[in-house]
Image 1 (spheres, rainbow, N blue to C red):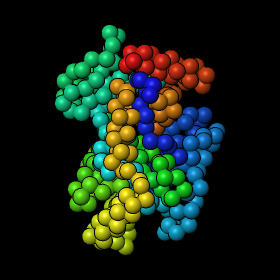
Image 2 (cartoon, one colour):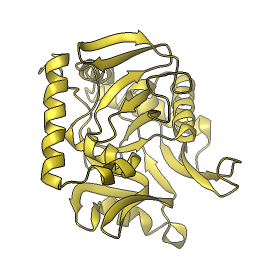
Image 3 (tube, one colour):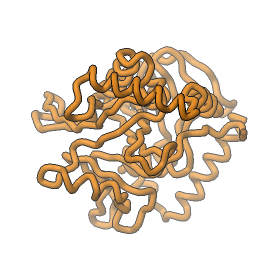
Length: 295
């Protein structure tokens, strides 16, 4: 296994609650009140929709996709959702500091240092909104690929907090059979004083519609028994995933860096837009540098 390279679940597509639109020649993120499922192919007009988007949207009220039936790939909640406080380089999208509120790993000129992590509000290094909670949720949609996933990335407190709680609870009540629970992502809205009473949307995780919790747990137990009889070792899969995530200091790749800039730091992307070739070259230099430090 190549050291310094995070081995993450295979990604078939992306789940978002917004989209990137072009305005006056500038690509900017725009929030939405529904899910969008895209492929990994991006054209000049944006990300190409994944076939699952059209399939699920057929049965959605008013054509708005607000629930997505999913299953988890792992029994361990923390393997399905990785969330940390992260400070990104706003131009390259490369993580410079990743922490959990207790300790952090920070990329410095002298290498990666382990330091105390006071969280975004108290950290001098990440003050001014530079440090954000950053979550990546991998889920399975459909039955076409047993190990392929769709990824939902977010810097929203509401989505991260809700997803982390739900995953932990479902892992507990199912007796550690989270990967077999029939679940669905659900888009919820709320208004706050910070949103000036306008709706904001976040992602929740609930038992699949039409099932009670006890029915979902019973189905998970039956599914787990069936998979064991067929020779599937879920515990070994979880262990392999944990080793893969731990194979690098930071979890990211070239594609993710550019998407972070576009989705979470649009102003920085505009300021640094001196041509796609220059940006791609800079991202590759940053990635190579980070790998040499972590190796």
